[in-house]
Amino acid sequence: MGKALAALMFSSLGLTAGEYPRELNAYPGTTPKLDGVISPGEWDDAVTFTNAGWMSQFSPTTNPKDLALKGYVKHDGKRLYFAFDVTDDVLYGIDTPRWLPSENAKAHELSRDGYPWFGDEMELLVNAANKWVANEDSAGDGSSWQMVCNLTKSRKGGLGVGGLLEGEPRKLESAWNNYQKWILDGSQACVAKAKPGGHGYIIEWAVNFDPCLEVEPGKFYSAALGDRKMGLNIALGDLDLPETGEGNFGHFHHEDWFAGEKNLRTQLKQLGSLWMRAKR
Image 1 (cartoon, one colour):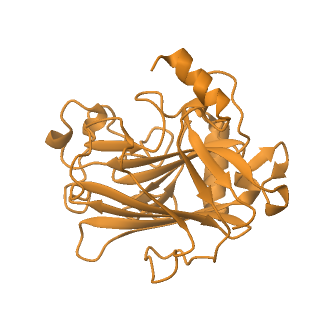
Image 2 (cartoon, rainbow, N blue to C red; image 1 turned 90 degrees about the vertical axis):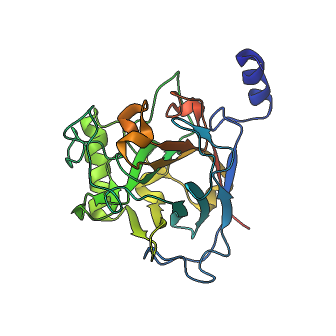
């Protein structure tokens, strides 16, 4: 399909939260406990999804024992919740040494020079305002953002403790400061925990509507606004041993994306859609 024809089709379908034709629905549900455990019944009222058919930025994922994802999404009227149940046969920094990429010897610094996404990790990209001008990435504020939950490092716990890290664009000091404030004051919260016996991990992630889902300047999502479409992307990153990712940036093994084209997946117009539903 030509790009012009695809764009015309996407436009006719009303895919305004991003041009990629994939979407999720977040319905109201019960408030989960963020403890890195998917307890019986806790996520039964959530919409579920998998990484089947996602775009591969690096080596394609072909074996579900190597890497697979079952995800959950819902909200409780105040916070948006995701859970990720990841199957991963090799956990970086747990089953392997904590090796560094040739591109950046400071990859594990918890600074703007580090790589927050270097490791086994999930990323959320949300365009709450559902707007873009051209090919820009996230603004790094409540209107649009990209955050990281890493299995083995975090802002609050440091190196060796999984959790939230400041995401992109790190080059913008304002974005870095916003993200760090959100982490430290609990506007976003995440727990990452390896599964008992290994071979995977669980992430549970909460996002406050205020200040993280700013649909208009100074106005944040609430159920009173009714159903609302936002841009969404989700990344599943898999780091094993350097030789496993030979030829890939940072020697990443896999990086699967919910939406977008290869090398363009962080652009706001490349995102899929998240429908915030006011009622079930």
